[in-house]
Length: 451
Image (cartoon, rainbow, N blue to C red; front, side, top):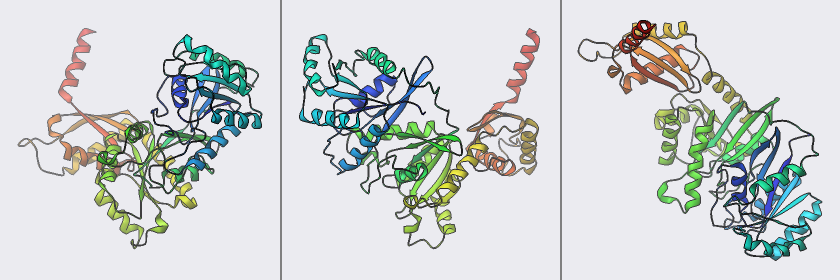
């Protein structure tokens, strides 16, 4: 028996996303006054006394979507209902009972689901009597809440756990072994890639750019291990952002890159690289993230003679991600997707490698003996006396040197490249820090004197 699932269902703009964020205690779903912001199923896990359930936010039932995605959104709602153990049926106490509320009630009765009714936007006790009319929907009295003000949040959680009390305790959901973020400009095929990995229509796929808005975490079981694949909104120039929704979507892209162990940077092979691609590349590099340049829609790339030509093109245009391996895929057909998953596991292994101190310092001896480049500061060479690894993912190395000022950006880049060639970490970013050897020696003497 799997983890219980609780789905939040209701018509557009009743506050479903606000409720998910309130119950989770963090901003997961985008919340905007505009109806129809949520399209995909957005979920998170909640727990109490070692009992867990998955809470799922859904799109507004009956939305007339501006991008003609109403059928897709409705299909996602039906999938959430079909897998739900319990449904939170949300209405808006200010609007009162509407025909669409009655239609949703009929749908829930058809599925014979366990339902908790909540009347949202009840910001004061004076409004509570208005919830009486919702009894006609057939799910008993509706609990008056305010998701925005956390009113009766604890009461609702009590009711949810009480309804789930007879469920077998499955314990905590397994921790993912790796998080993969899908990023790229609009219509690069990120959602198609997520569905190809999941083997099901987990997120909405459409030819219309900008379909995905939230960052959607999709948990996937592969070979007995749990992965989290993060689908993100397509990125475009700030000047072309249409509204606040796009702004918040871009913020979630940045957060998804930070959360990821490996980033799949999807590139549309049918269009030239743009400034948006270059900006995303810099963002990934600045976060020191392991990355795969995933060239998607390769089957449609008519003007490229060979993969080697395109690899040279990417290396020249995206030099900050020179360390990142390149893969060619067709997400819509699932072509080469498993190979990229295997490559992700290899990158994660490299990024979490612990390099022995002896082996690391031997690599620095090789770099020292090469004496490549001009002398700096007159007759003084940059010199590393000792180095130690202080972190993984990203690989982080602290060097004790003669003079940190001699280790400028160009020399640090050279050292990073040589370390990648000399050690089994050539396809992941390496972060270097230089500290004065004299300062460290002084500190050791001071500690010895105090003892």
